[in-house]
Length: 209
Image (cartoon, rainbow, N blue to C red; front, side, top):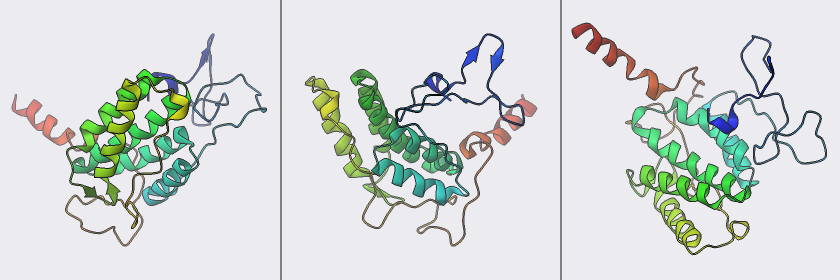
């Protein structure tokens, strides 16, 4: 969780869920900025609870198409977290394009440029099309936007465009060798797959050390 997504603390009071975990209860605008409690006169960020990874991906694509990039990136993080290690840079790169869109909406060209550079670096590790993502098109988009920002274009005139999928659509698989999506829904994960994948190796290294 990034700093601008961290729960707000007011004195000793912190918003919490029913299970006691911290939660951001303050409303947010569509770019994710926290607003005063009780705000109702502006479009607000909505909470989305996908049932599986494929549902999270579908939500992310739909929200992206509505230019609700903050909500899209939150849904796509479920996909990133469930991805096999070989695909983590792909999904993180896509997410970073969405976050660049958030920065453009917030009139923060420097933040947008940084995220676009990071996205391009990650996506450049993949073939032109991977998991239904139009990698080549996404890279070209990143470079065009970076060039425009370097030319001091007004962020209000720029947009990250539609979700970077091929006409056949993006798809998720937990299997790094798969050539097609699974025939059953992929469950959401409590911890990122790419994080837990390294734990057995680190445990062996500690035992052997």
